[in-house]
Picture 1 (cartoon, rainbow, N blue to C red):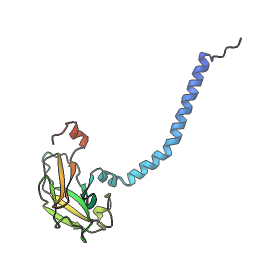
Picture 2: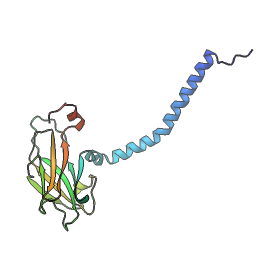
Picture 3: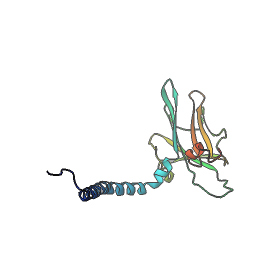
Picture 4: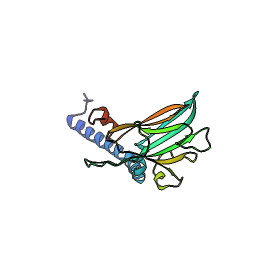
Length: 186
């Protein structure tokens, strides 16, 4: 009578063969794509770093967008105890009903935790600072906005209008998940 079950030696050989085959499949299928993806990431690393510090808000009237604001926090960690650098943002604004999209006038106001900016400087469309930012459009106006230094690890940039209400953007000097876990005081 023939034994239809493989012997222990045959089982081991089959397992090793199957494991080797699976390993080659995974390595062969992903390595070229991973290398290309990593090369693309390295080419645009500044863009990706800035993207994680970018937020967007819109102001509406009767479910129609009247103002769009994007803000990128230009913060680089500094591990000095007495870091007193100003808080700097690149702010892009597009106003639907206005000829000139500006964060000054037309009833618009921009504050950082209730504090007005120290300086607002309009940027040209070909300014170097805009090359590495996301959400840069032809129809928006862009500003470098500087606020006084804050010791808070987390704060809110508020864009508001007398008619359309306000939009709040949350920024932090540390990873937001660390704030949620209570590692850093707000």
